[in-house]
Image 1 (tube, rainbow, N blue to C red):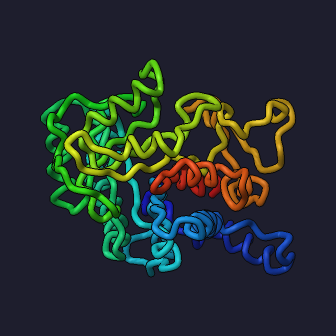
Image 2: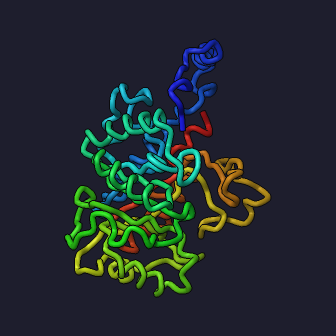
Amino acid sequence: MIYRFRQRRCTLALLIFLILSVSCGKEGEKPDYRQEMRDFVIGISAYARTMEPDFVVIPQNGIELVTVSGDATGQPVTTYLDAIDGNGQEDLFYGYKKDDQSTPENDNAYLRALLNVSKQAGNQILVTDYCSTPAKMDDSYTRNSAGGYISFAADHRELDNIPAYPCPAFSENNRQIGALAEAQNFLYLINPGNFATKTAFIEAVAATNYDLLIMDLFFADGITFTRSETDRLRQKENGGKRLVIAYMSIGEAEDYRYYWDNHWNTQKPAWLDAENPDWAGNYKVKYWDEAWQQIIFGNDNSYLKKIVDAGFDGVYLDIIDAFEYFE
């Protein structure tokens, strides 16, 4: 999260850096970390849509990328906004400081102002609030709906379960959902470890009526969901149809993914950075590096190609806010 007071860039140190950059040429320049992330997302979107024109692209967090300046009064970045279909945002009303605790009003207002820039550009906003008290879950759904957002009240931060409350799901319906703009709710279930088998996972999801499912491409290491299984997951219990979206982290590398080379544990590639202290096995990456981007998209062996081949309707991109780490 980048607070407004951190946006002040006209410091003596920065002026010195700019002077040195001009005198040293490109060799002395740092990447524009925000634009590099925008370009990364735009590239992912363009590649996916060469194969599936209606493929849905939703970056999560890093909402500052929607404007040039990173604040709500800045000029919208239309190339970025046109490349995506929505924005995901965690902790908007609950969970920013602590799960099941209201997000401070100033942080909520800051995020909503930026989210509304994307919303006004025609994109859908998906909010994940982390709360487990029924009254707070109800409040989350009500406040998000009033703001024109669709939301999910996650009672497990791990996103490893289908909440028992509310039942039925908020805004449950039997519509045939064919586009993100038609969705009225969603289920965020990316950790299937609580399900004994892939079949058990599919049956549990198929017994729900959510309009949109965000899940992982993999049930377990090396075990992907197939196109026929994705088709089954697309069917609601009440006869309606939902969108099925695959989660993919692009700002960190995960050592449990198929692409991980064990040699990296002792000899890191140039693009691999420090381990995330909050999530063991997750490593920051220099996401603008071509070698990392080729792992993610652009070729038949890429992560994104596997998602498209498995029949998913779109992709939910995580660690978009990696630019904060490098800044």
